[in-house]
Length: 276
Image 1 (tube, rainbow, N blue to C red):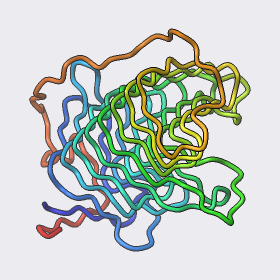
Image 2 (image 1 turned 120 degrees about the vertical axis):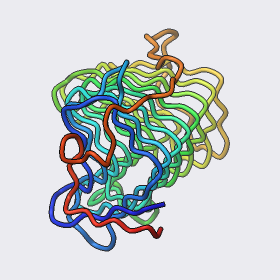
Image 3 (image 1 turned 45 degrees about the horizontal axis):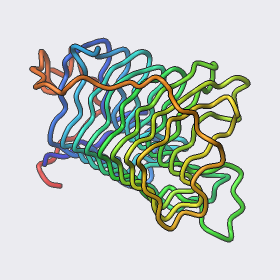
């Protein structure tokens, strides 16, 4: 795969104000210690009929404090599949008031201290609506003797910062080695009515599989397996919540591509290499 490495901006690659962009089959690598906040930033782009598609990417080494391997913001819509994300400071993929589908990815976190550094492998914030399925999500975990202020989660569904509830349909994932498998609602916002459907996932090697920080959160929880889990949930789930399902994926014909970067994709003084 060719490799993109950035130099100078807070992102390596940005997609903005466009639809039907496909990023396919290359590596995005921030290298050693760096100030990148995003590996890929998708902003004001994509729709359900013309999404931005991220596939077959390897994204790693995004190290600014609070950084995201992938950021999806400001009403964007992405389809993200068959990617590998690791070595990022905080979030593997973070949705902010955006929508999409995340499936068939491998997202791996790190050991953290739970106070100075907390991780979320998939983070849905402030009115985001996402289907999350058939992923391998692991290793966002605080190890003893650290005394964590916040839990690291494989999936975080919340209304931070403006109180807009998020909705996740989480099914058929392998979720392991995190403080919390799925964390619904945030104690950092006054009102949080976020909810999730949690079906047919494999939870293992977790402190807490499904957690709610506020009583206002809701979830339908069925058909999951739990192995080497200290506690399955800290709340009695409700029977029914609205379910968001991304339509059957179709082949997206890009109207622009990464090669047309001046019109569609902004690259941070990017250097391209044909080596991995």
